[in-house]
Amino acid sequence: MVLKRSKISRGIGRLIKRKEVNHFESIANIFQEDPTNRYKYLESFTQAQLNEIANTHIK
Image 1: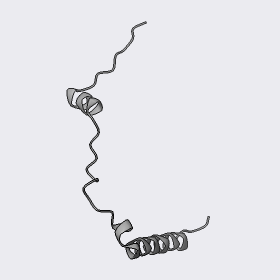
Image 2 (image 1 turned 180 degrees about the vertical axis):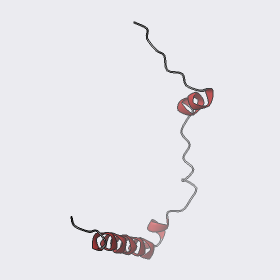
Image 3 (image 1 turned 90 degrees about the vertical axis):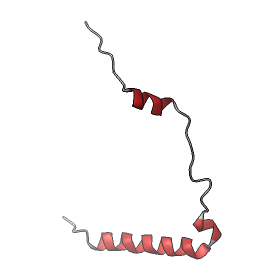
């Protein structure tokens, strides 16, 4: 029986081994700064869900 070995390209290997970088630490959180942004987002999300439910045909 011959065992096959997986080959990983050098680029993928480097991506797997490198340290994770969080680029979002320097960006302000708009939901914490202004509660109205959070409310608007949740309202839009609720409306989108209701529209999806309304447009779904029951079979």
